[in-house]
Amino acid sequence: MDSPRSRWRSVVPWVVSAALLVYVFGWVTDWERLRAATERADLPLFLAFATADRLAFFVIWTWLTAAALRRFVVHVPVRSVFALRGGSELARAVSNPLSDAAFFVGLASLARGRMDAVLASALVPAVSHIVVMLVQMTLALAFLESGLAENTGVATAAAVTWAVLAAGAVAVWLSRSGRLSYPGIARVSAWLERFPPRELLPFFGGFALLAVFDIQIQWLASRAFGVEIDWLALAARIPIVYMSFVVPTLGNFGTREVAWAALFSDFGDRDALVAYAFAINSVFLVLNVLLGVMFLGRALELLRAVRRARREGEPLPRPILHDPTDQ
Image (spheres, rainbow, N blue to C red):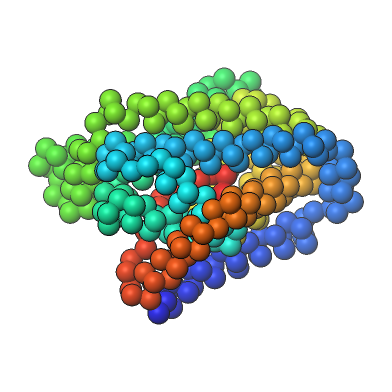
């Protein structure tokens, strides 16, 4: 039986999404201007670009997850990892945590019950993506014509994230040298020993290519929607949009609209930015359902496994980073 805490976690995304959507569409949005912004959009082009973005993240993220499993845990069929991920996307239409739990429960079964090793290897694509986004944000910030004065939010986010990574690196170094004795840091240090830096290079490279593609496709999609956003501004600020997805919402509805309107207000009016973000979310929601339906048998199997695990009181994994297109 689900615990009260588990039930509360499942309700929070619905509550937060509803509150944000009421704020965005019921309080600060001019519906006439939003309708006009939508009518100016080249919808066929926008749909093509948004679909390409979602599918690219699905394919590359899943492929890199499979590569991490095969390299660091156990040799598994890549097609099986794709089937698991595709099946879990049906649950993502309702809940990101439910989808993530279903995917990782399926991976643990595929890897012969080695949940700890599966989670360790799953961190490889997640952490690689975080580092790539941080480098992307930092490099773009250095080339923005508006400078630091007009991009204090980007500079602050980059500085805080670099500080967290640096603090973690120092803590691990102190633990390995015997100067710091803390069980949590010791476990992190032991995990890191499984991943030699040289073997992580393909993952950083894969996410670097994905980042460039994502910026370009968002640049094209926003223009097709009638919102002209500078390429470097997208490179600098998109990571912050993705970081905002740690807020528990239903399919990022509400979060994406608020983030886009706040971060790109100097490139378009608020209503056009809200319309664009809502359209992106809607396209992703439809694609998540279609991907799940393609792997419907696997999706139902995963959901049954999650329900069984919860009924038996088994802990379900909660990854540190969602697929940013939720996605």
